[in-house]
Length: 513
Image (cartoon, one colour):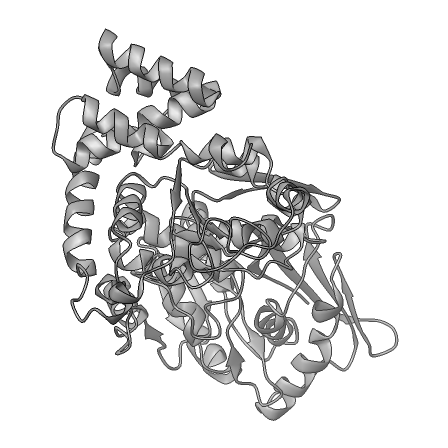
């Protein structure tokens, strides 16, 4: 007897339709054959399914049984198919009467006892189920809560194989999870030890640069000696970022779900991600990829912050792969298994020392680096990558007087209020477009929203010539100036706004060339 149910396979952060076909009662040796380009984890599902069937009070097939995961040219990975395979076997062997089996999207790993375990990519499955007009999804608990965040599709929590059988047989109901309840459970409590900008002593210029960067989602490079507070400032940037919109939250959670981070309880609903990979990370770890391409660090930082500490210590090849994603906000990865495009609209925050020993220009420490060593150290960061970083800011070492001061700095809440006000102006400006912040403006939008008079044009031209800046730097100066004007609630870019924006590019040439 033939039974068919519907499941899915992950392709990057999207789900592809998979039909699980089970044919039992074939003549021949009692054996299970699993076809359809499965990986090792899928091939092992037969042993898990047979043990789960036995321990749930059902019998395993006593004839030759073939399981096909269609389409056959799509590679399948992970334990997604344990639950649909088990249900298909029960229908094919006559132990379950479920005429509506094909109405449901089903996925889940089975333990040997028959209990279910969550799987990756539940959000992508829910979007696909809604697109295909399926009635709903049957998923394990954690996965079901993710999928319920997508409206327009029913999601039921399946805790065991026996529970799924009783539900499909019409004997007992399952718990249906509503989108509102799922979102309420997905928001983690605020940590008691949450960091705040009030803990930062001094560094007024750096704090201002961070505020401008966050207000317009501009990339930021901090340059200073060890102990000047660069990492401390970077870790507090999420505290002043505006709250993610509903669409942004779903995009963030979809990426993290596809990467399997939500299974371990790392629910990120309501929070923007902050990713801080070690400088030994590989190109694939940063960009994404693998045999079946998946998201890397830049995609996990989508709508959040990617912090690269000790920037020159990263491999040159790893840094160079950032150039196209920084421009486009997405990355395309081609592998033998297929080509995928992953979103990666992140805010890059980087920190570095001015020289290998870190004390170049520090009045209290002597720099012992030779000019050749300094040049070699700085040359690890290419000019094209620097051009894509909007704001370069010096972070000098703190004086003893500043360190001993008991006066707290401005709190994150005050900074965030100004940032939110600037973002509201940008939302009104870009209403009806895909652009959400000044840093993502196109060339046409720059001409429309960043006009400057002849006097300011001459000022910018003089700065471009003296600093030998590129055409890309010209556009980025105008974007930053527009953000500074937004923070000042100004309708037009004025001289103080443009001068401050130019100042943030001055280190581009004086430090690196």
